[in-house]
Length: 509
Ligand SMILES: Cc1cc2nc3c(=O)[nH]c(=O)nc-3n(C[C@H](O)[C@H](O)[C@H](O)COP(=O)(O)OP(=O)(O)OC[C@H]3O[C@@H](n4cnc5c(N)ncnc54)[C@H](O)[C@@H]3O)c2cc1C
Image (tube, rainbow, N blue to C red; front, side, top):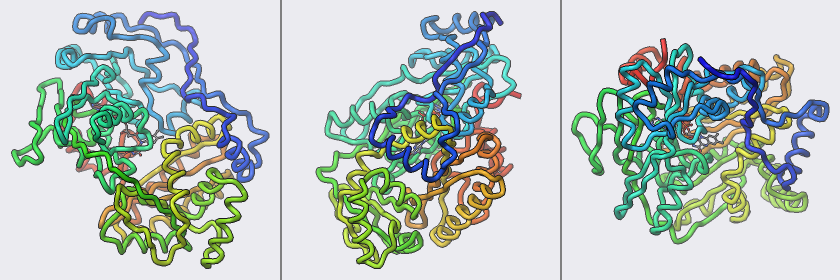
């Protein structure tokens, strides 16, 4: 290794506008919940670490395969390519615990991918693929690697449309992809909250789900076929609506989290942009009443987001002023619902699904419209909380309808018991995020006020995950398993996953 061994400072949280209206409201909300906040030192979102230096031997091997202009050894970039956006990673870094930093960042063009993988295989170089780096499962962690590089997909960005489908590069972000589709009057229909930064390759590799999955499907429904580059061979699907010829690259690529190969160009479905959007906002007496209503439906709006009473209160506080909240309070009282009730926003594409909901108070479309305006705003709120020394996190699962109420109540109860036994502050809230005929996905958000974020996060996450599993929930619904959730997946499944791994992209022994 050669290098200066000097200190490097990197910003790991995007700077947010503290002066925005929402920041003022958040400050007020958080001080009401966490009065100790006033006396806690804030954080500017930067991390300082020792420059790991350059691995000259590795660079020599790489430059024999790929143009030097496509290789970076910038230490700040290398750190950023070694982490995702999970709270555990942020908490660890804030604590001064720096993960294994990749030795170089390589940004190949399409023609470079196959030779790069072959060189990696023959020279014993390990790699992690990076898209938008919004993954939240510790998927970039590789310990004990002698030589480790990040393979950045940001040059793989072509887009070729053909009527109701397109062939697209894995490095296109959600917003880039949607802009390209919109130019020809089409939509991909995949809108994860991380839409601005997450990529097509990342969506496929994690098994992502967008906010309108009830209408457009999850990523496996949108993806028709792909190309998977492995260090031993390249597998290509022909674009066809369905195929029963043994195995498809799509199947090996989906949810592979960068381990089974590099996902290359993919064929994805497109739909005409809907001419009209319809909005509704209903309040239920409680979460169970909302769940029971949804459970009885045969058809779902594109978005149906049912929040519990804690999340409802937060949404109303952040999105409306005192006067509007008083009007809602009076309106709910007239319907026999205690404020804040449980809000369900629905948005649909042209249809008027669920415009009249039995047992709920209908406040019209404005709250749902407001929610849609801010639908990608949570990362900003999360970053703001970190800078105030609070620790935000999210976890998600899916289950059959019969288990949904119990899974929710047991999980939130466990959280409250755990923070009380740890003697720390915290709040938890949840919403039903994606709907299937057989059951929902449930998304939990929690905020901790603790001086030991890393330890307490690990403990609480473990307790919650165990509650999900005990109550019939899946390990995750759309975040993937990365390194954090592997221990909850059965040994048999892990063995199969290992069999599919490309040796240059899996763990280092
Ligand atoms: C604020 C926020 C909101 C989010 N909202 C949602 C949501 O609504 N729905 C949802 O599903 N997820 C959501 N996520 C999680 C995350 O955005 C998704 O997992 C997303 O699919 C990751 O895409 P990415 O391009 O950022 O991938 P990365 O984070 O770069 O990578 C994630 C994993 O995929 C692998 N990978 C990436 N590209 C490739 C490729 N071309 N070939 C092989 N492997 C590859 C990586 O090695 C890694 O293991 C959210 C995350 C954040 C931080």
